[in-house]
Image 1 (cartoon, rainbow, N blue to C red):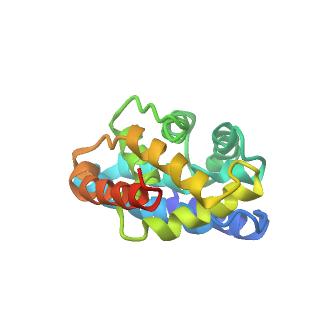
Image 2 (tube, helix red, strand yellow; image 1 turned 60 degrees about the vertical axis):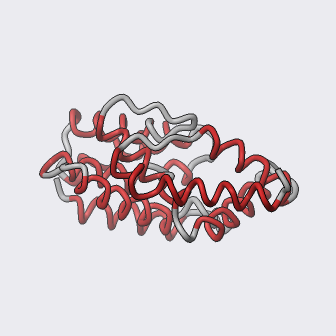
Length: 193
């Protein structure tokens, strides 16, 4: 498995082909999720081929935005199935990658440890200091698609989302839960809830 080549391929494709209104779901997000998956995965004891599969899934998890936003996870898997054999991945490995990609679909429902790690990595930002910067990018992207009309409505949606979100791995809980709770408190204060 040539993860370096596979990662370079999809990051370049995202940079070259994604529309400009995707200011959140872009190559920067893919790299951010890769970094979070690596950090969580290594802390959770993931090594060898399992780590390679996890990190490949991180690179490819939102590649489906190249085709469409709704149902992008299935498209991400299709792109992975069409592309990854060129980089030395076999069908069983790609099936596992697609399981991880599908575990990022909301509401998240991971079925194994690697899927839990990628799900946590995808929403790592909920418990970080840059949460509000990242959230604003997602608000602008959602506005483009007509999913949200104003920032108060967005804040209320964020409150509901965060209240129902859970981290799955001990590492993510230890690293991000307290800050996630603090970020939730800040949003509630903004809308006086």
